[in-house]
Length: 114
Length: 111
Image 1: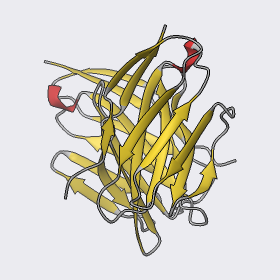
Image 2: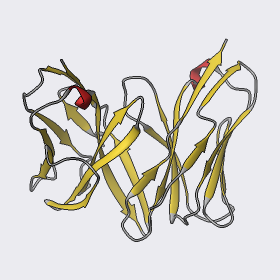
Image 3: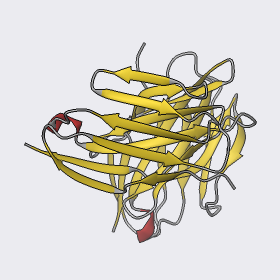
Image 4: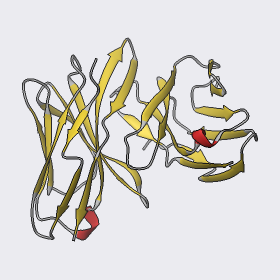
């Protein structure tokens, strides 16, 4: 099976702009989660989508939004970019076997805001 | 709020040494995962432990889940430079399936 793919891998944007990141989960996985990773804060949960519905949400401002399509592909959008949004954005798709949840991560999108 | 405390945060050792990384919480998890992440890449799932007291081995890596399913440890025997990376533990809530991540342990193994 192909793994989780994320595009683009690298992005440079200017403050005030907006950006859209894309994630394609492992085939058959219906849950997609997004995380922001910075050296100081570690992995911070943004949100999770399951069957096109947001199921969980982290503590991020409304500038961060996402959506999921019927084929389980997901996008996240950040509007009015700030310098502090520079980070590695990770997408993970999940499988559930019984009560066991496992997440498989993509390679990430490195966003730099200047 | 569920929290996972990982220790130590940083570890720099010589090739051939042994080490243990700890992951502790006051919450019970239905399962716990360990990941390794290399710079600029996403975390890679190493193992999932489910049963209290469970021990799993992956070559030189030994993972243990605490009896009460609140804590876990990762032990590396005879560390190699290829073991260098960020190790993350993540506990799964049985209710939501949401993963709670520890802050990570950065391991550097010097040749």
